[in-house]
Image 1 (tube, rainbow, N blue to C red):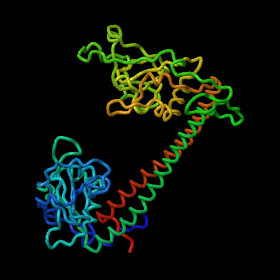
Image 2: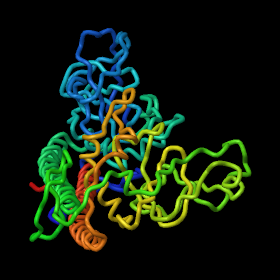
Image 3: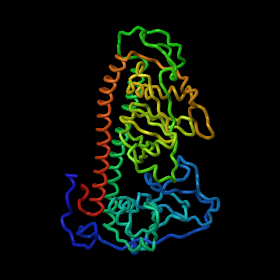
Image 4: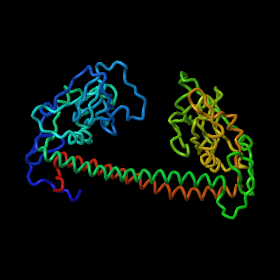
Length: 435
């Protein structure tokens, strides 16, 4: 924004988010700019939706199921160039319409007040800025955060910055161009992240199924999904590589003496990192003694289950300390003569797609993995020494890829912050567009 200069002349204003505006700009109450459009009874018109990311779009363009009511007699009519916002205004659910259609009666439809010369896209940009959404929050009220309705009765008491029409249009044209450039930049970075994540998966899969020694000789594996493995590797069913698979239970929730102890009681909510070091909830020694809850030794592999069935994905984690687990988890204690715990977790991550393909079954409406199929799944097993080398190799590769992903994510964050600052500066008159 270094090339965008301030306007030559300003005048003072009393506004929370600006102390001065360029000469010729106005600070007006919304009641002087907009009036509410309340026109009902147009059930045959196309259904529109107010989204956070895309503004006002056709409901048919949404990738989700239509959840609107069958009776649309109270739905509100929208004309092209109207502005519309929903109860999620604070989250960015507002926009201008390119279409004639109807929206939910929970929305507010705004039309230009007669005599006002406005560019709706200018206000679209203004309404979605952080400062205006924060401003609107003071006028909204309700129970749920983010769902507090901003009624027109309150919206009309708010103020908006109104430049001359030709400047509104110039700001819109400039921001449209910049937005296209920024969106393209973000898409490219997101594509880079996807490619890096795919490379991450491919490197891991190759390492845990083919090894990292380019001179290895291969042999038949007798595994459906893996035709051959390095000659020195062996194959065993999962149940023959572990000491036990433990399930957790729920201690009596109404027994206060079972809680507020110092023994970690891990749930799926705690599985936010690769290694579990703590938990939100803890149980007492009394709970351990008076229930069938068992201590899970450190370096066990934790998996999320539902009713004894593994979930569709396998978010495997290690625990660095002894823990207990609830009924939503299972813990695998590996045979350390066959597997390093860290490598076993890495192996599950690397062949997750193959496990899902071989063991997946429909349980009610959820696709899951039956434990009996999972424990019979065949695993390729390198020596412990080679497992350690693979761990070190993958850790190095992952660090490099994660660094590149983190850099791309930071660039996306930075460009979004730049866009927010650019829009704010232009719609509040702090900077002028290039002539």
